[in-house]
Amino acid sequence: MQWPPTDDSSAADDATMFYHSLEDNFFTQHVQCATIHDAILDLVITDEPNLVNNVVDLGPFTGSDHEALIWTLQVRTELEPVTKHTFDYVKADIDSMKRELDSVNWANLLGDLSAEESCIVFRNKLREHRTVEEAETDGFG
Image (cartoon, rainbow, N blue to C red; front, top):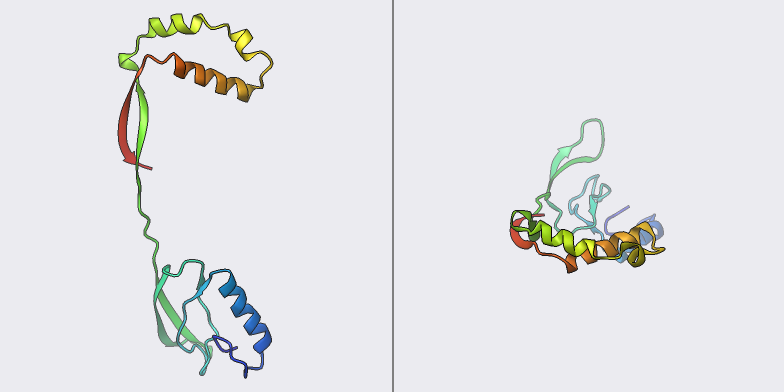
C-alpha cells in the first residue's frame, strides 16, 4: 500500500477506504518518508495533529526490509488556574446557625424525597442560612 493511496496501487480500494476513513474522522498520519522500498507502509496515526513531531528515518530495521522510525511525542500538559470558594468556619456564628437550622421543619421539608433529593434540599437550606464568610483561594485544578 502506498501512502497516501494512489489509483495505480494493487490494493487501491482498501487503502483508499482506509485513507478516507482516517480523513473523515480527523486522524493525522505523520510518516512522510518511505518505510519500505519506495512506499510508506508504516504509519503513525493520532487524533491530534500536533501530538507527533520530527518523524525521522533511522535506516533499515535489523532483520526486516522496513525502515526504523523515531519521533517526538508531545505530552506536555498545561495546568489551568482555578478559583475555589471555601468556607471560613473560624469566623462562623455557630450558635446563630444552629438556631436558624433548628427552626426548620425538616420532616415537612424533606417529606418523601429520595436521599439524593433530600441532600440537595438540605444543602440549599444550609446556603440560605449561611453566616459563614467565603474566602477565595487560587490554585491549579
